[in-house]
Length: 351
Image (cartoon, rainbow, N blue to C red; front, side):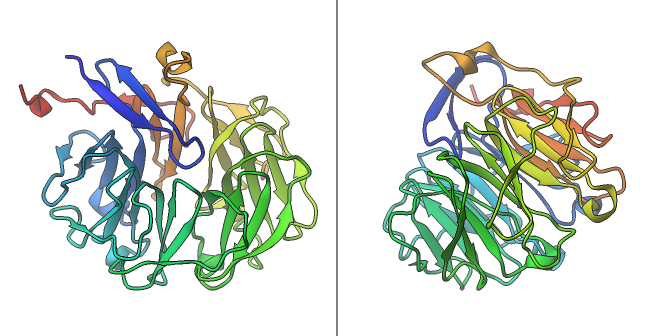
């Protein structure tokens, strides 16, 4: 079995990668907010979208209404368990699609988008939906994507990352740009202001609120070349937190759902995954048992990160999923060990 897979490096990378291999390069990943009950996971590989209803053990390709011809760059599910049947995908040339029935059918929702090359779509419990195009321009929709308008943004900003929503900071969103500036919106993404800048000029690749601070003034900042930082005063000062985290290129961040108690945060990097901190980022330990890489990702022709997005599922044993160049990985012991999930079953063979 061989196929050519076109792989997007997502929001932080802005280029493509191809792979000739009997595995899926996982470009995007999302899990249902009701995963504990429905075990639902979505993944994207190039222009293909798949759904699993049993925790990743089997997959079904979703096609009804998806007439796109460009790679899928991100997947976003409404964060409320009561509305988890609404989800969006973004594509690198066909804009955004929405499903209101958990992926059974899809509708193109592009009214107001000036650029159909969308690298990120993000949903909020307030009902707002945000999108970022390949030029770093942000859009906002307050009607489930039926129409879009450009967010009010400072000139000269090229957005490269967005923070995920937390319960204590529901209306607050952080954005990072290509030169180390951090912006904040307190109205679900409609209006933005610059609140700080890293002491180094580098692309911001990941942002995560410290959920133990209900004021929203503390957060983690991952960068492309300068490692990981944290601020506790809303961007007035920054401290590097890289003890045991040797890699400088941070790809994604994820905080434990019980971060207030266990102080656990995870980081993935371009070459290595996964790093875990149990003291709020002060020190890190690498866990890679069961994870694999593909040397093809390192070649000049492909130049793709080995590990992309990490997703913690909110359930008793903290099941985690990790999207990588070499496939999809799953952990059921808080990231200490991993196993690769089969995403190219025989049933997917078309010819």
